[in-house]
Length: 77
Image (cartoon, rainbow, N blue to C red):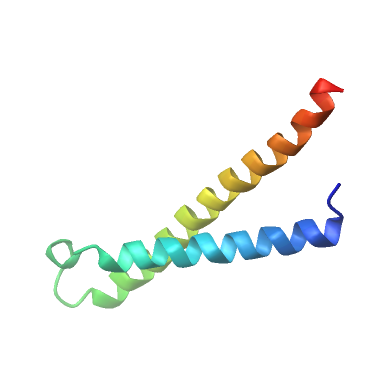
């Protein structure tokens, strides 16, 4: 069984990894046609917020699958 400290470290690393991965994908998208002139700063803030939301969502999904697969051991005992 994983201790609370190990779970916290795994969760933080997972969140950071998925946020980084999402950021790399988001900056590769061409959003220039959707941004009005003079609103570049707002578009960058939107990209950061979307990156955090999508990255943490993906991380939660990954961590849930990990936890559920560990809990399956209790189902078969």
